[in-house]
Length: 302
Ligand SMILES: [Ca+2]
Ligand SMILES: [Ca+2]
Ligand SMILES: [Ca+2]
Ligand SMILES: [Ca+2]
Image (tube, rainbow, N blue to C red; front, side, top):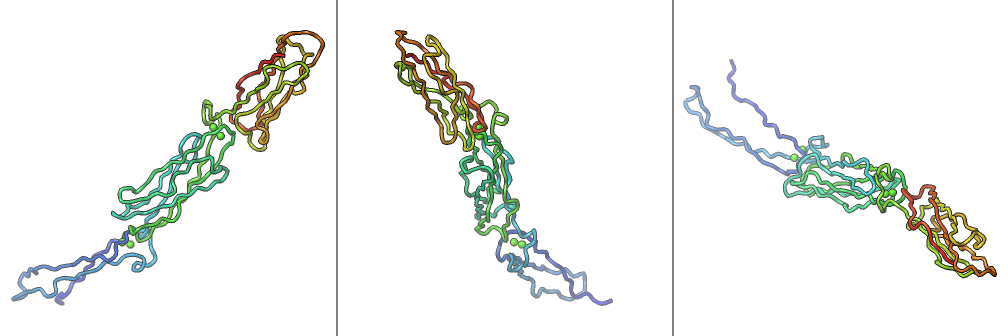
């Protein structure tokens, strides 16, 4: 039988994603215990120091073990007036003393920049914060906009030295803003446009009384709000005034519309006579979530 003069063994260097630079360990052999072969057994070289090399320069093409993945998750929808929540996270804890800074940007599909409040432009991940939460506020308004979509997007992470490689996983969350009474529930003041009429409290026979119908928020482009105008007679009679205006049309260019009522001059001594100009339920082609009347009418003496 051949005497056994050497034995091989291995130590595995564990692969990870951390950029650690050179790391050294030693394998040391201790005092041999001989069952009776030799007169004396002594140690020659008893230590091998081994340096672990890592990173792409040494490991070659990075595998999954060599990468930290940064991703974003968040709400797929948010109701106007509420906050949408997002989380940026890295799949491995950041090394102590290092940071991974992730830029956050916003893109607008059907939504517009005024529809959301975006305070967060970057998040900083570190040893204590493997994930960071933030919110985007969906601004409440009175416009009936239907579903509107924006996206929150993370960009290339900047790593101070934690990882061998950092890559993006899921980098975009598309969020749909929902509005209107079906989604927002009981309308508040923010959800209403108010239509009102103002005008002269008195007019001298033979002159015109002036009236203005207005809405307190600009009508959306391409939409109209049509407001019926009627007249009621208290002490006056229909022949006392000339009423040409039966409706006014408010639109993006006309947040208010003026019109007049002529008080017919005659020879009769009638004393004060009162009529009222009354606006009815506005018909909105789709500008607002809700349209309501404020002051229902204006009372006029002549
Ligand atoms: Ca590695
Ligand atoms: Ca490593
Ligand atoms: Ca609203
Ligand atoms: Ca709205």
